[in-house]
Length: 166
Image (cartoon, rainbow, N blue to C red; front, top):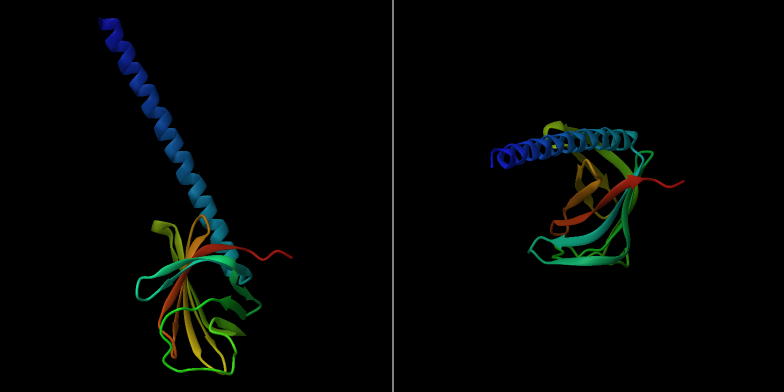
């Protein structure tokens, strides 16, 4: 009987140490991914590919097409769907989506190392509108993009950040 108890305790101790070692390795891997994401975002050359759009009133839709935001050389290029309220009707663009290809201003990166996230804020001013964008990126590259506009209700997108393929 004593042998069974001793073997059970030894087995539990071995499992616990293996679990702790696996947890430490995962934590180290997450920190390494976080460093890579910070490098990518600081380079100012990346894509955000949206796979879900979330309106201000709580409705959301999965996106099947290739909707994106690309930051490259101080220029933001976006083609994102929009559904929600428009405060000003703009017929000059011919599109109901959020589309721009203009200079970025007030680009700010805030590192949140404790929770392994990075927050990026910037503005894009077009002829039609001013967009305030906030991109929150996790260490694994999953991100949410929120766009505030003068002429439309706020909308957010879930997706993934990656390097620009050249």
